[in-house]
Image 1: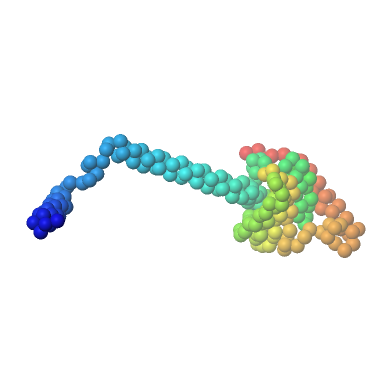
Image 2: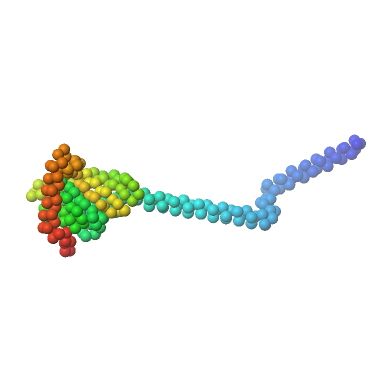
Length: 234
């Protein structure tokens, strides 16, 4: 290779380099973009992928929302549909609808009486307004648990207020509701949070049996006086 040819090659490389630098400067100072030269089919493909990705995101969001809705429904408490009616019963504001929370063969017990069936339960609570000038649950807190599928227990730690012959009476109580398939099958009211006396909870079974008979007699007398569970006329 001669010195002259080497000199020409050096000049060619330098010129090409200068031209390339000039192109870069021009492209940076003008709105020219290499994307303008991308084939339309490739651009459309990218747009389609973007749309499909967004649709997948939307489907995923819908799935998450559906799961959250199901979890919200499953988190609904047993007591949500029961407590408002219990409050009406103890406030002497009971209506026939309030007793629909009970199963047909449900029972109710407190230290004074023992009711079997919805009609006797009606007599027990309809009688409150006949005895007390005022009655209501003034404070309460709720705990509930599922004992088995379709079965649960609701515990209402509460304070009851009664007005009797001008006297104010406060009763601390624990209401226990046994629920099966959304219906109350057993309702117990433990005054002072102490278990009800019966043949199983007292030391002498005979004494417990006499207490049970007394409470049943009190219930039957109340039941007769209240028209055997007849709903009051509105």
